[in-house]
Image 1: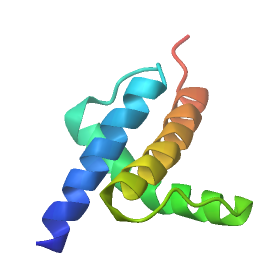
Image 2 (image 1 turned 180 degrees about the horizontal axis):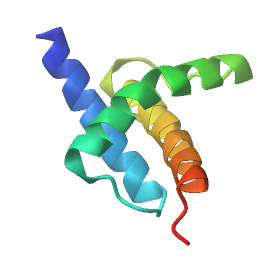
Image 3 (image 1 turned 180 degrees about the vertical axis):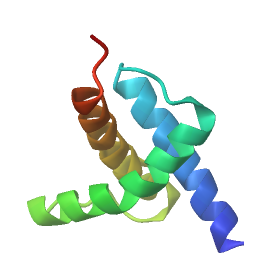
Length: 82
């Protein structure tokens, strides 16, 4: 059950990150992967800054979205269409 919840939170975070950051889209599966990877990155970054967005689903989705935005920015920076 925890895997399903992680996938749903990752999907929501990746989708939210792709909506906020207007770049090249990665599709549904790409958004899920970016959201799942973005969660720990966002948690680490916000922890270093001393910021917390609360607990529960909303905090996890917002934290994952921040990490997803960072990943999408780096992805578009490296693989920018010319």
